[in-house]
Amino acid sequence: MPIATLTTKGQITIPKSVRERLGVDAGDRVEFVEASKGVYTVVAVSRDVRELKGMIAKPARAVSVEAMKRAVAKRAARR
Image (cartoon, helix red, strand yellow):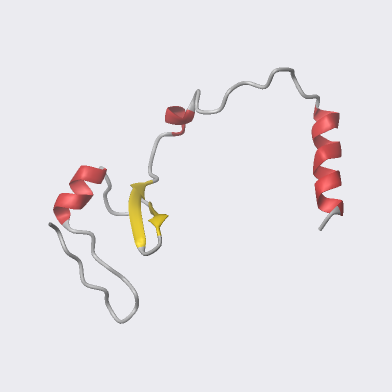
């Protein structure tokens, strides 16, 4: 099992075998997702935006730009 050491600045070096399995390289981003208390999953977020296609279902009906503006204004007013 790969192990990393935390530096005094709170940084770690992800072991090479883990980087290869995640498909990440220098400059790529990773996200730490809390799976349960004290347990995190490391997820590569350096995906091509085209991979996201189809993840969110199309709305049942189209929403106008004006309706979107009203919704944004309503939400902003609550803050």
